[in-house]
Amino acid sequence: MSLKVNHRLLPLIALAGVSLAGATIGMANEPAADLATTDAYGDTASLSAVAQLGHKLFYDPSLSGSGQMSCATCHDPNNHYAPANDRAVQLGGPHLDQPGIRAVPSLAYKMSTPSFSVGAESAADEAAEAAPMTEASGVALANAPVAVAGPLTAQAVVKADSNAPDLVPQGGMFWDGRVDSLEEQALQPMISPFEMANADAAAVYAKLKQGYGKDIAALFGNNVLNDQDMTIAEVGFALARYQIEEPSFHPYSSKYDYYLRGKATLSDAEMRGLKLFDDPNKGNCASCHLDKMTGDGQMPNFTDFEFEALGAPRNADIPANADAKYYDTGICGPLRNDTYSAQPQNCGLFKTPTLRNVATRHVFFHNGVYRSLEDVTRFYVKRDTNPDEIYPKDANGKVAKYNDLPAQYQANIDVIDAPMNRKLSDAPALNDTEIVDVVAFLKTLTDGYDPKKDGVKAAN
Ligand code: HEC
Ligand code: HEC
Image 1 (tube, rainbow, N blue to C red):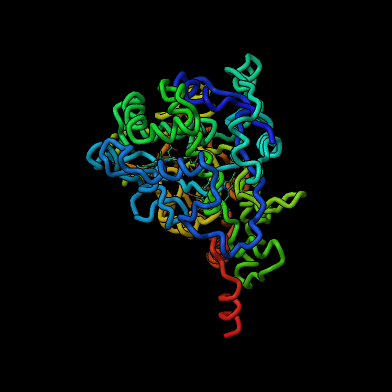
Image 2: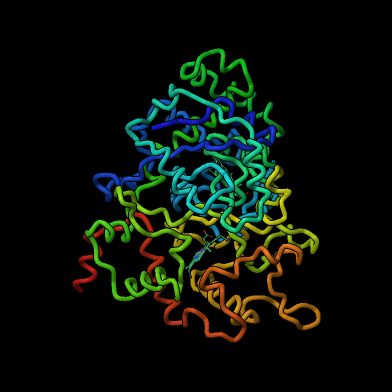
């Protein structure tokens, strides 16, 4: 295991708007010995003391401006750490009436996300391999030797400026990759005006000192407690440790996991769906949503962590979209503001999400525009062949293709990767029956599969 970044410095660096190269928290994503029993929530006995503090913080509404919202409000443990309601965006703020601007991602399977970088296509895989961390190595992390990678090197900036096609943005937290790690991420929802809505970091610090002073001093020492940035950094560290150590964030207990390990059989429809998901001339989904076990037996996380502009339709259910001049351009903002957000080739790009537990999500894509997996899959295959079925018409009756991205960035939209490489009036890469099969496969990715129950069902 190697820890490359001093976790104590991360929030400072994040607030200063500087990116780190090579900051990664990862763990070997091996399935637990007994998959069926790893889905239990609330058993903190096996968590390190730091993770137990993280557990308390995760569920504590007093850490919000409203006093009513915790991490778990949006990242619901009963729905794989994603919202259980149907809203495209959640409401937060001091009075819980401020709408967000993006769909809430699940927090499951985030621990192997590499830090944000722009590089060769395989860099994400290398980063994930470079920093594996087993659960057993747990808290040792707190004492691990540290080396701050520092601000962006000149070389990295030059690379990012290049238009070379093999240089793709990848990794990082959030849909736009704007922070590098789980530790660093934690402060952001606490001070976001439409999430937990504390006035500022100082307000968070005051609450932490009051509510968790004893815990923080006991775990990290009194010096930490006297320093605002260090206190917040340790709290970010505790929240990250909780998400890394708590098994329900990464149970690897879906039917597909059992199938990969030779312990379950896919139905005919699921198997057809898997083939279409893999086939480069059909769904080609696996080219971005990786679905194979690695050579060393790690389960796939259904993302290559790379960013793409897919051109999802605009979602009128997001109040911010009422302003016709407002656009969510992913890496280019509104929430990201750094070297990368100023580069036009990054505008419209969003991080490829995991598809684990995707069938339990109520809304899909960064803007929550779709509400069924059939509609998402239809978008992929009909965006270019039948855009009139995907996008609304403009005032002149013309199909408003790519209507959620300003015209000057539409050239960033992926028209190279199948199935998005077809032309108007080509046949879609998947027909309606095949779409149903792909969705049947996606439903095998939900954790908590019970092979015994399924066996009984199959026998009937
Ligand atoms: C009001 C709802 C809300 C609350 C409360 C909230 N989050 Fe989030 N969370 C979001 C949204 C929305 C995003 C995606 C934002 C974006 O991409 O810009 C997100 C993203 C994340 C991510 C990145 C996931 C990914 O796929 O990259 C992590 C990690 C996370 N939240 C952890 C937390 C923690 C820890 C807390 C409590 C301190 C918390 N969240 C509280 C709504 C919320
Ligand atoms: C070129 C890479 C690429 C390919 C190929 C691809 N995806 Fe995606 N997928 C993405 C990206 C990027 C997003 C997020 C886009 C956004 O939110 O704007 C995404 C999002 C999704 C989501 C929404 C998940 C969520 O949590 O909101 C689903 C479902 C999905 N893809 C399924 C598929 C299926 C099924 C296929 C094959 C038919 C496929 N994808 C092919 C990159 C890809």
